[in-house]
Length: 119
Image (cartoon, rainbow, N blue to C red; front, side, top):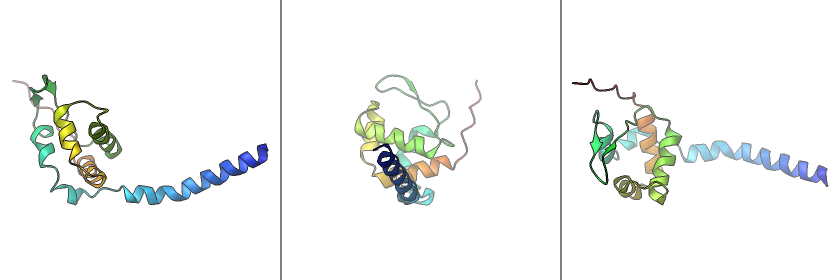
């Protein structure tokens, strides 16, 4: 019985290893395609020291240089409602999985924003 379980686990593991490249390719984002999709992002995430005033004062993070997988997971969480910021939820609701991957590819390949000089 133990031998059958180990054989099954080994077979399942090998199958997953074989499928992972196909899954990774299916979710690969295109940073060039994202250029038509990032206008809503740039309005907040590209402004040094930007803070929103709705629903509360919130420091908007710069997402340039962030890991693509993190950006996709964050967008998925906004879309599903697991993350609650209303503006981000509304933006994420309009994005397909491919849109999310494209936006993530774009921002992960841009330089992190330098902090703005304090006055």
